[in-house]
Length: 291
Image (cartoon, rainbow, N blue to C red; front, side):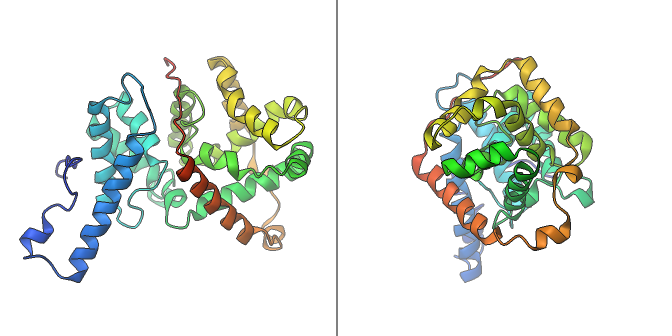
């Protein structure tokens, strides 16, 4: 209940300090955390759609800020995580602000509560994301061994491109029509494994051309530019291919997973990948495709 937050240009503290006569240490810590969330949201909104006629407009930024701030107030443990702005922006693109907020809540809500379970992906520590990246590597080793060997020989770590794909629901690298379709599928399936399955489908479709690459730079350049050459129909075909993938057929058993000793290494690499993305801060161009 109540209205969404609309204090993008305020301090985000909600006036608690004034009501409590300055507040105690706990109140001050809460205010500092809220201010940090504000800064993180505003920083991302000012860079994810640079120069876009509508998505970079002040009206859209204010609406998305309100959605993200309201979610952060609702779920203080997660608060705001880099990548969530894409989900909120596309929700606001097609829905009224309050309905867009409800969509974000439905996508984030745990599966056992009837949601899609994205919350686990954005929780502190990014545990679900790390699991998905590990599963991506395992699937490649089993069913796309040539691609797995190529990445290993060229020193390409899957999280260096897949982290961006998954955390932004593919919106940072692919036409928005793809993300909208993935959101539909997540709502229909009541889970978010389609994000991993589509990554596998992309690499399977690109296998032949990827194998023509000779080094790290060529592989990364190919993966970063190929997405802009696909038509809407080709993207739909890739998503359909991803829907058809049964992860149970691609992944090792739980016992085999227990013997995997790479998890700590992946955790470190994921954090490094996110740090690199933060430092580079390169503008990302998105194509807005009419549905």
